[in-house]
Length: 187
Image (tube, rainbow, N blue to C red; front, side):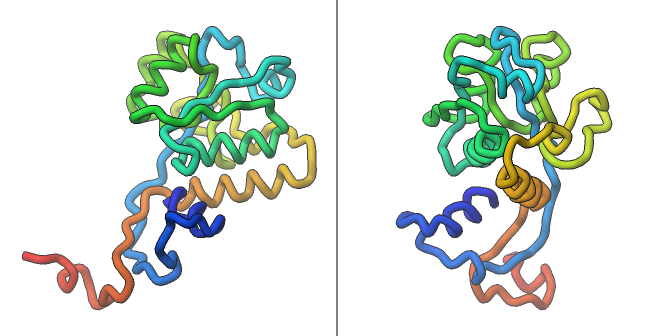
């Protein structure tokens, strides 16, 4: 959903759709998204990232992917010196690059599948996106708890929270009848 919203907002040429015409079916889940850093980076907090003298290298599949959008918004909100490196095939590839700590310093991703790396200390959970702490990791602050250096930053974080809370949505083509699930499921 993040990519669709962003493409629509930016009126990207490749986005040949009108988001308002899609049929909203429902939200499956809200995914806990986390700002991770490699152990090698030394980053333990967003404050550490704000003080960085070097450019922080973030990875993603595409700049309009959820991870790319998350990083763009957080970089603007917190005034981070960042470089977004797109082109990874998927989250496994950029997460392994962060764990290795040579090619990437940090990434924004869902927690699912990477808890072992956190437990081993190979990945640092810098902050949870949103306004609520993750129950399984109550010591990890939210991005909303970090002081924002400029007034525009608050608006960026509000946008990030809205995008995160939209979660994983199911949408259908324009004009899909709203008479119940049985009318759109082909048997």
